[in-house]
Length: 386
Image (cartoon, rainbow, N blue to C red):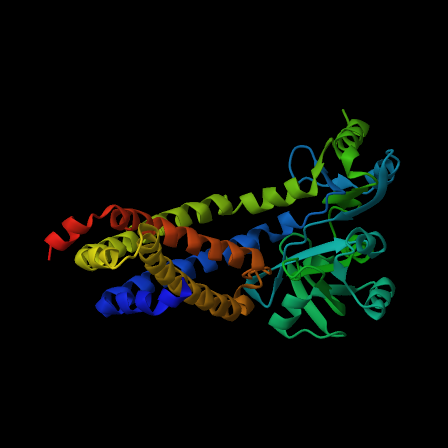
């Protein structure tokens, strides 16, 4: 089949302007696909990477309602629970009101074992365990703001004040963490809960939520029910669910990104299908006589079908490859700008593989009807139109 590639290219070059505009339209479609895939990955990455063995225990009424620190020992006593830590939303901003940071006070002794996917050097780990005012920051944040180990950084909280009503807290950067997965979180700040609880003026002895590791993920539903049963009819009843559901709830606050991306993608690719199919239909109509001559010279119906479908596939694959390449460049350029909000704004290998599959499907679908028409063309009818 590859020996007929020059023939296919020659046919596409007959109407150079039409071919170029079709290529451009397909390239734009796949550029948009690549950008949307990166956005979706940015919102869904943490949800996808959520640990199957981790549960989240919240206040039953609302996530903004805190839980007592005393609950930790009671959760640890539930059979099947192997580790418990906690986090609290701090609501930090840096320098400018627009620089919103995901900042949490945590107990490092239990937080680090709970999240082994966070990569921190032994020296940084040791510094953080010794330094009450220390913090670890994600690689993306450190790169964005130029933070280095040992630097003091002021962060203003929207919620918690220190003495004399001062909402600005200062932390020492004890370490910069990476993530085992390229799509994982590298844009948060974690500082010590003991320092935070001692210095704040309100809410002492409370935490935002508990993170619970279970020994066997298969028993997670039963363990979640057992945890909530411990606090039934108390002043702070709890609701325990999977970490994935917890993170998905945060993502859904921005809307169903998956549905939005899918809807836009369907609309774009349906339009591109019509454009490509129209291009191929015009090409086949213009070459009706030539196709009849090919059949007269002994080209079989399967070969004629393959030649027409090959044109459609070639133009779609070339246009799609150009679009995906442009998307890769754009995502790489925009990554540093958007990493504050989407630390995983990347075009993943899975998204690229899906894009290649879409090229093939779109190319075959666009060329299907013209190819069938060429297949059914009778030699007499084709020569009669000369």
